[in-house]
Length: 435
Image (cartoon, rainbow, N blue to C red; front, side, top):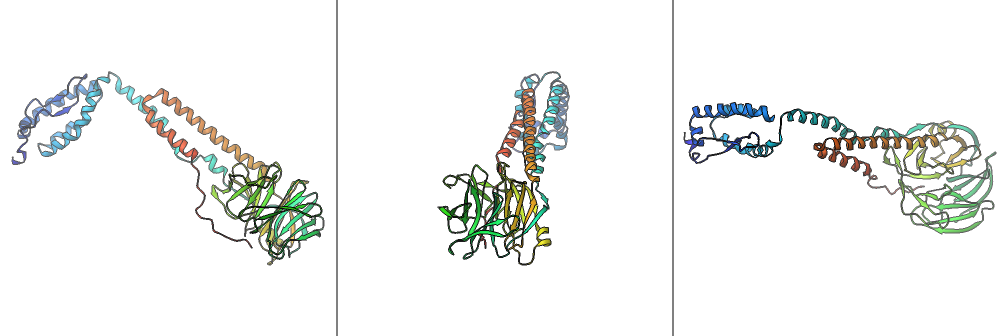
């Protein structure tokens, strides 16, 4: 009995919740009597169990822990259990007056509704299937419509179609040039050479003025589209790779995963670049560009690869990829290097393509992506509409079930956090130099 020494002074410990808001039951005898008398323990427990059964029927609280007291016995563990239960039971006591007849049925009903509406949280915590599927890029093999010969010594860096002619910018130091090509024969009609200090790159047209970039020269040149007479120049920072005109502004590539807007009036850069994402991940090495007027799309090839991608101007998402490897293997030779030339022919809505040191120009059909890219935008709108429906249901649940406010508050937080979060661009872009 030495283990109970010093416990005689502990009296009046809270043990059970009260009924109808009255004071909670206390031990009617000294705790030392309970601890030192097994008979007293049995009497007290029996009385409390009998009264608690009646109380449970009135207030819906099931006192399951009472059945464990016999097993706990009169040891120091009893004090630890009492210490744990006291704040819980005291809190229950303070709210016991709120529970009335039939309250348990109402509580269960409310909990069922909360569980039903809480299932929508899984939709919020996961990515929308519409959005995920809309950004899965489909790969297409383009159809060849026409072939004309290409000067295999031309290191093609930029290509465009204007007034029935192909205009071509070729690169390499000491070999850079600007050319006009006959689209019926593939023969050279006119050419000017650049200074050996410049490595020519992308090519676009603004009204009747040709705009040609240089790789590391930080300078662009303006030419008369008919005579190729040099009219003026402008400067810019960084490397110049690709250029195209969509009738509103110029799109400029520097080999990274972003495209920049340039004013066609003064060739100044706008602040916000467009991040290009392929299946929701940034894609590097954007090179030669083409912008079919009023299509909302940018066509680009990837440096060192024989593929063309169509890009949404509004979102930067890649809509489709066109694989040109079969064309290379079927028509080109081992001296041909990567694809690097895209020119939109508005007379038949087809595209002229070629590459560095390729043997031919190819007229191909890439038109499927224009309409399909708009469909992707509609799928995104459907996903937004679906989210709005979920929000309306949640709001309705909040007003019907006030006790569910904390749950739906958490759901709202997750929903709006996911709508504002975006995947960050990949870490470091390798400093790769085009040749």
